[in-house]
Length: 64
Image (cartoon, rainbow, N blue to C red; front, side, top):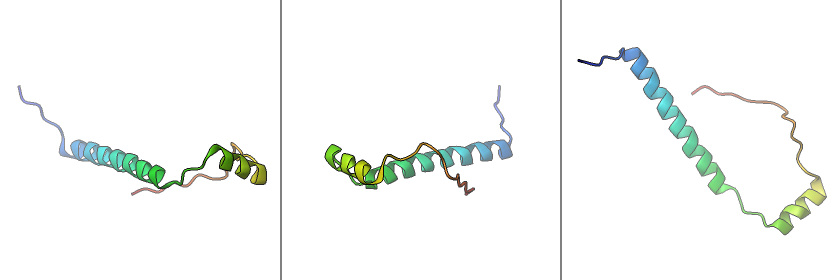
């Protein structure tokens, strides 16, 4: 028994997997570059500027 996969479907699956891995790694990189804030500093920021709202202003999507 021989398993065959159409090249277009296989190619699409590989691209999706690579895209997901790259996105995950970029998220890790972005998180590692964020500065650490202490609880005291975070409280000071919230006192000065208020807590961030949960509303989303806009969503940007980019296809790579």
